[in-house]
Image 1 (cartoon, rainbow, N blue to C red):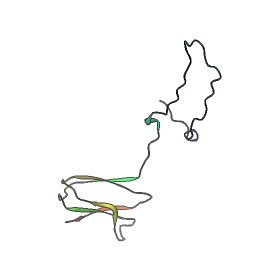
Image 2: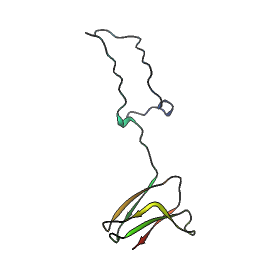
Image 3: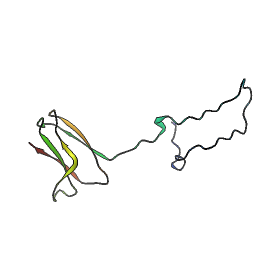
Image 4: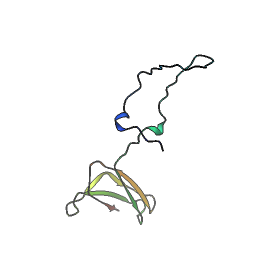
Length: 109
């Protein structure tokens, strides 16, 4: 298994390559080609999200995702949380940042 570079060596750019020994046995001039790493070598970006899978929905009615940090307190509409399903089953992904709490879905016929 190939291990990724330590975190301290992951950043930076190649600015110079020194070839102390050009080698022997080449039939013509030697070319060194330095290419960028393959795309799968780049660390992925991770985004915080919640996925809501729902069944038994009323098709073409509106639903609003709501959030609260404390379920005994008032609920607030989640920004971008309004959606209209076209089927009785639906899966929605909502992105959030630094938020811990509870979610619910309100049916808005």
